[in-house]
Amino acid sequence: MTILDRGLPSPGVSPDPMVLLTPRSLDEALHLLTAEGAAVLGGGVGHTLRRHDRHRRDPTSSGSSPERDAISQTSSDPPHKRDATSLVSVGSLPELRTILWSGEHVTIGAGVRLGEIEADERLVRTWPIVTEAAGSVATGRIRRLVTLGGNVAAGDDSHDLPVALAAAGAVLTVRSVSSTRTLRIGEVNDLGGDELIQDVRLPIPSGRAGSAYEKFLSRGVWEYACVNVGAVVRLDDAGAARRLSLAVGSVTGGPVVIDLADLRGSVAGGVLIDEVARRAAASTRPYGDVKGSAEYKTRMIAEFSRRAMTGAVRRAEETPRSGGEST
Amino acid sequence: MMVRLRFRLNHEDVEIHVRDPASTLLDVLRDDLGLTGTKSGCAIGYCGACTVIVDGEAVPACLRMVGLLEGREVRTIEDLGGPEGLDPVQAAFVKCAGLQCGFCTPGHVMALRALLDEEPEPDDERIRRTVDGNYCRCTGYVKILDAAREAVALQKAVAVRNSRAGAATSPEGRRR
Ligand SMILES: Cc1cc2nc3c(=O)[nH]c(=O)nc-3n(C[C@H](O)[C@H](O)[C@H](O)COP(=O)(O)OP(=O)(O)OC[C@H]3O[C@@H](n4cnc5c(N)ncnc54)[C@H](O)[C@@H]3O)c2cc1C
Ligand code: FES
Ligand code: FES
Image (cartoon, rainbow over all chains, first blue to last red):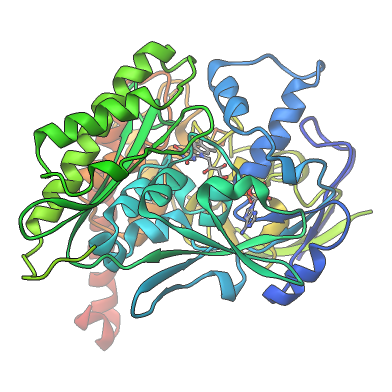
């Protein structure tokens, strides 16, 4: 056995070390989170980026690069997680590591890694929008580390899972020592300092349902999205859209769920898809950055909304007619 | 205050004392343990130069908090090769000249080592997806992909040789 002592802190190490707590059960984790300065630790990728970013802003550290700027831009601290002094590791808690199927719902634990979501065959069949979004994040090596809870809780408008989950109508189960409540994806910034996301619940689609995820990479290589869009539809036997939903990411306040309520009942064809794309572009506010100007992104939002909706409709059409109508 | 951590590192039990358990495995490997074969290219998960194997899976050491490694099995580039020769992945990089400056090579080698441990005969698509996680600013990737394919062939040859040697000495060997 080798025993070594860490000497002087090396460059890059924060002068204020973190306390890292590894509870054995969810209840223990919830208790630890009641302490002042305690924050949830999922896979640790976001926390590590944030530490790096803080060091980078230190004038004594080395200069910036576009990639680092891209990271710092997308790794700003969510309001509920500033100034953490201790990290409560929940990424290995058995209670958060399962994908459970009940009659009407699938419940994905917050500690499930994106790589596991991407590879889950039943999820691939029922919610391809979710597995495609998971599979679009960075590389397999990073998807092995990132947790669903961490990807969602970061509250980052360009993250992929929140866009897919918002379109799919996901509900977050949020726990603290004293309460259990639910939040929508768009409400994730309401998470309290002593709360954590326990799981993400999705309805199991019935009837002729389809979903699709589109992530536009302006350079064609893996990175954060230029724009990202998720679409979900359910058709009746006559081919009219009974359920219709579209969410757009990488825009101010994103993911933004586009209001399509009045289009329900329309035939799911080119006219409807064009209208969905038009509304997505008209009702979102992208910001200009290294991936494109706001004007360019608006055009891309229209195009990728069209593609996502077309993909979702095609999948719905491929499922056999039931004979009945569902709403 | 120091925090004690124990894990397996290159088949040895190690106990380290870190000031900050939220430090990255990359910093601890390089600065504390003197294992500088693992390179720091970007330190933010993009370049793959820091790839190590944790519990059989390739991961970027720059994104792995060392405090989460308690009880885990870590392998670094220093684990490969030895007196008996190079690892087939290393040998393939040498044979195919899959490097120029060599800075990215440990990351490529570890990523491909993990791939071949999991899937001894990966198809080209899987090889490409693996190499996609590692930047190389010198070679243009053609020779790296050649090296990856060669590694599959060399490893297969080693497996055949080992199974022949096993068959000659043990009855079990014949069945493999
Ligand atoms: C090179 C690189 C490329 C990337 N590319 C993409 C990409 O293309 N798309 C994308 O979506 N993301 C991308 N990411 C970002 C990554 O998905 C996020 O950093 C993610 O937040 C990391 O998740 P984690 O589990 O490691 O979280 P952590 O770092 O552990 O946590 C992140 C935040 O969530 C909080 N948190 C974690 N779990 C919970 C929980 N269960 N309940 C409440 N709060 C919680 C933490 O307190 C923290 O504020 C990339 C990252 C890297 C390094
Ligand atoms: S140093 Fe870790 S990925 Fe670049
Ligand atoms: S050989 Fe120089 S970076 Fe790859």
